[in-house]
Image (tube, rainbow, N blue to C red):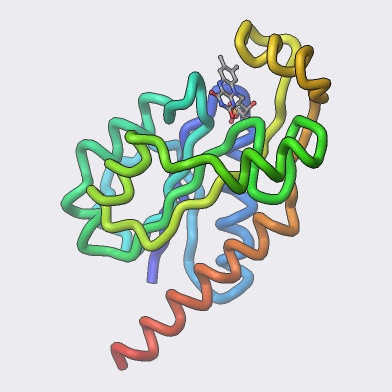
Length: 180
Ligand SMILES: Cc1cc2nc3c(=O)[nH]c(=O)nc-3n(C[C@H](O)[C@H](O)[C@H](O)COP(=O)(O)O)c2cc1C
């Protein structure tokens, strides 16, 4: 079983998460490769997909959005999971703990993500916090950091990332044995 962990990144934190997901899947015996979504030449070569993007202004970056738009039929025929990397994940984030937790709990699914989930038949979607930088242009983000006393820096929760990869590995192994 070959799994594509495809990503779109602006500043690298989503790429590192994708690499870690792929490493973890490989450690569970699944042939996973992490690749930038604008460099995938033959998506039909994969049996399952884990696709993610950094979020900018509430949306996925274009290479990831384009990949899903272009290949949604293929994705629907294979097990697919989606992830988004922003300032607040499900277990960590750039803001004080209470605020991270409330946003993680109450944020609804954006229209874009609903389209992607439905269009690809994705089995799940997970938010991860990434690296929030002060040295890149992001006026809205910087205002939020100031107003809500957020912190710049690396907010990735590697244990949560590994646990999500493990849950995907379990599902893939279960569907493989069911097919035998
Ligand atoms: C221009 C810009 C816009 C952003 N917009 C959002 C946003 O709407 N929501 C969010 O949670 N994070 C937002 N972020 C934070 C990034 O998603 C976060 O830093 C992420 O880790 C970036 O991933 P990357 O390092 O792979 O590019 C924004 C960052 C930038 C630079």
